[in-house]
Length: 139
Image (cartoon, rainbow, N blue to C red; front, side):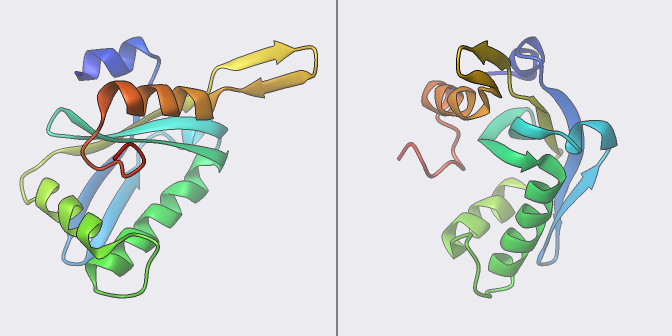
């Protein structure tokens, strides 16, 4: 899958991603989108979609958790990110790589029981379709 697929699905670049030392850096470039809740997102490194995820709460809070958890794992500390996954992030985001985060709010649907976003369903569908190498959930 290519970036044109992400754009066709309505995802737009919202942050730059890099690793410096033991720090997983997510530099937000679209403050409006990261304020949204019920989002789907994709990490892209050198044009390859490497991870798909979603966030029920505000995306900015999920990004803070990514920075904290991957950084802790990179430094060898206790983290919800496994050490082997942190090593895969380091290998993928080597110096000179271009890392980015694409995102959008999940599609909103209205049913007889209420209105909600389909971010979880969209995430599951894309993970099953793309099988990104840094997603643990499909293995």
